[in-house]
Length: 66
Image 1 (cartoon, rainbow, N blue to C red):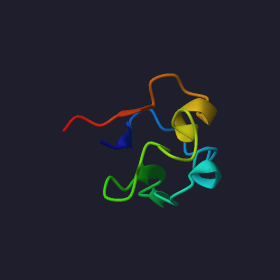
Image 2: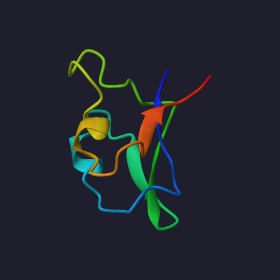
Image 3: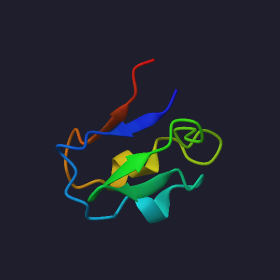
Image 4: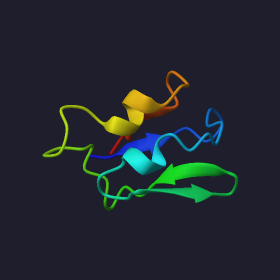
């Protein structure tokens, strides 16, 4: 599975981009997006997804539905 950013909630603060161990987070059309093909939910690197932990907007970054 992968994480995803709810574009309507994203404030484009950029806090999530530098903490991603797989560099899956990139700017896209004024907000950020997560590449589901490379996102590992930080498995093997951290106990929980770092992007979700550092995001200042509750509910902006969630687990993607398959």
